[in-house]
Structures are given as C-alpha cells and as structure tokens.
Length: 322
Ligand SMILES: NC(=O)c1ccc[n+]([C@@H]2O[C@H](COP(=O)([O-])OP(=O)(O)OC[C@H]3O[C@@H](n4cnc5c(N)ncnc54)[C@H](O)[C@@H]3O)[C@@H](O)[C@H]2O)c1
Image (cartoon, rainbow, N blue to C red; front, top):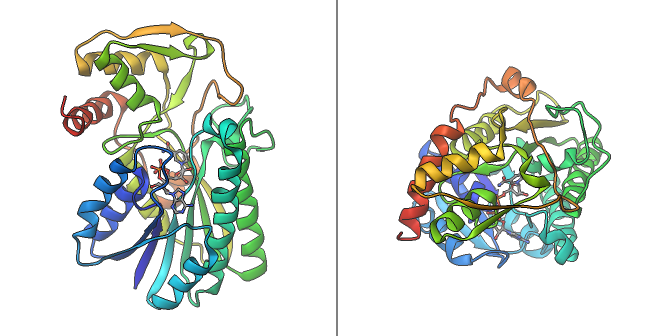
C-alpha cells in the first residue's frame, strides 16, 4: 500500500512525505518544481526523500490529466492521497491570476478524477487554507462559519476546491477531507512567507514593511505539528463516504509585533520597520478554532512561537550559510 503526496518538493509536502517514510510507508511523490520561488530549495528538500528506498518520484504537473491518470495505472498499490500541490501566495494572485485557476482549480479537478478512478481508495486528504475565511470578523475562525467572502483569488480557488470536493464525494462516494492550514512556518519553509522575509530582512539590515499599520494577528503553526496533524487526519477517514473540513492551526493568534521581537532575539539584531496601510487581499487577523480537530483526531499543536521561531532561525542560518 502506498500514499501519493502531491507538492512533495514543497514545504509542507516534503515534511509530510518524510513523516510517512519514517513510519514505514511507501510514498509516491509528484511535483513540477514550479518557479514561483527558487526551485533550488525544492530540489534540496527532495534530495533526502529520493535517497529513501520506499520513495518514488514523478515530475509532473497535476493539471496534466494524462500524466496524472496514467500514474494511477502504474501504481495499483496506491490507496491514499495527500494532495498538497498548489500555486500558493495571496499577493501573487493579483499578478498572475491564471496560474491559480490552472493549478488550484484545474489541478484539483484532475486530482479528484484520479481519486475517483482508484478502486478502494481509503482517503483523499487535500490542502485548503485559512484564507477562505477572508473578510470574516468573528474570531476564532470555525469550520461551521460561512465562508462566502474570499478576499483574494488564491482564497477563491481554495474555496472552489472545497466545493468541487463536496460534489465529488456526493457523486462518487469518496472519503475526502480538506485541511485549512494556518500560516505554517519552520525549517525548509517558504521564502515568500513572513518568517523567511523577517529573518532575511533583519539579517541584512533592510526595512520590513508591516501592513495594517502593524496591527496584524496571525495563527503561526509549526511545521512538525502540521505534518503530525495531517497524518492523524489521513489515518482516520470517515466511516462512510463524506466530505469533511478541519482547521489545522496553532490556535494562538499572535501579534505580529511580538513575533517580530522573537526574530530580533533569535538573530541578535533589531528590525527596521515601516508601517503601511492594508493592501487588498491581506487579512488583518487569522485565528483557528481547532476544537473539532482535537475532538475527532486527538491532535493538539505542541510548539509555541517562542519555541518555533528560534528553531526556524537556526535552520535559516544553516541553509543560507550565515
Ligand atoms: N504554508 C502555509 O502556510 C499554507 C497555508 C495554507 C494553505 N497552504 C496550502 O498547503 C499546500 C502546501 O503549501 P506549501 O506551503 O508547502 O507550498 P509550496 O509552494 O512550498 O509547495 C507546493 C508545491 O507544489 C508544487 N506545485 C505547484 N504547482 C504544481 C503543479 N501544477 N503540479 C505539480 N506540482 C506543483 C510546487 O513546486 C511546490 O513544491 C498548498 O496547497 C497551499 O496552498 C499552505
């Protein structure tokens, strides 16, 4: 039996694949090394995975239906899917909207088609995002809340994934679970996200721009907790065909200024900050209500930002030879 992990050269995908291999699973990884950020980081994440005897890799675009559907034919042992490949990033979705629909909507549809074609597929787990909560004012964000106001195209594509999954479960009897991740950070993280941007700017003495005049709150979730949560969910499909959604976040909404101070401490330098107004698409606050996730999977996040930021900074310095 094996698990297909898409976006396996990505931040979360590489950690999930490593955790699966560590517990003795066979993993088939797919990634197209998209150049949204430097693919060198993706090759580096993939390298140790490729050395593992139970890991197989296919370089392919998830929106390429021939390549993806052929993959199922070659791997009859495939019985679970963790679909994490996506075009991420909120700001970039104003620059290149088409790639978001191509990868996140068409690609997701191809993954659903792949899933429905696999006899005896036990579970289809996929990445959604806290961004679907968009303009919601009620915090913390709970899965039961309405999510009709995505404020970025990225969020709209992730919400579309949820809706398409709902339809496929209804029509074809899949067991599918969408995970709304909240700002994930940690070793091997993404260069386009705030932890990397903060660490790099502080190290180089460059100014950090904080939107919403610095009054931003984020639920920063440490990667090990997120990988463990993803596996906990994967291991517990619903008893019958159903589409479920869960929040995966630290459930601590942190003041950005406090997080920045942790970076200053870890790097031993002060940050230069410029306060700016909000940009369209930017959420001012994210906060995860994880009561359902804890109840159904016994999962709770363990790593606080006070612990996680120094761990990330250590890795960041090592990776960038600082
Ligand atoms: N990191 C976060 O804080 C966060 C928050 C919410 C949701 N998510 C979601 O979690 C998932 C993983 O995110 P991540 O942070 O690891 O991002 P990432 O960009 O590091 O990983 C995504 C991977 O998918 C690959 N990919 C992109 N387009 C592809 C395509 N068309 N075909 C095949 N592979 C493709 C990329 O090359 C990359 O390696 C994504 O679906 C993302 O939207 C992440």
